[in-house]
Image (tube, rainbow, N blue to C red):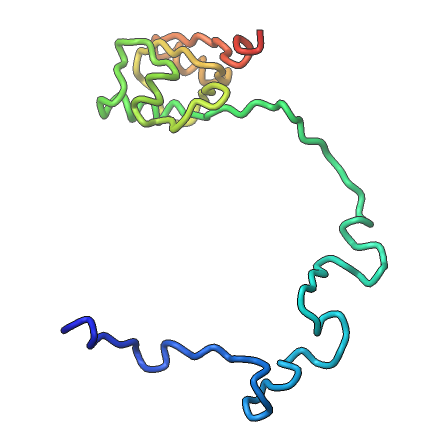
Length: 159
């Protein structure tokens, strides 16, 4: 088989309808746009416009608030940390901090710090140094014989 012998399956591609190309084409004269009016002209953008009536998105009440300086944490579950320790990607003998988690590939980027949650089974004796941890995560690590140090990166950067 050569490149010039390749062809599409019959009926797989269809030619584009060229509008406004004479009465014999089936889409001549007005090009399927009807007669006169704003929509028959080019350059029309009227999404959400209701003919002068107040649009629906303006009639409905606005609710809520988005905090402009909110912090977003990279979330890690204890079960995943255990899995990476078992696979040898994390060293349980050293302190596991943000740099170690990023280097192992468990977290893509640090964001405003790393927060540990207690989902999954955890049995390794490790020292965790993270920006945040849930109470149940701290209990699970201490039960396994390790310790959790919460050192907020975001607060240190603000000072």
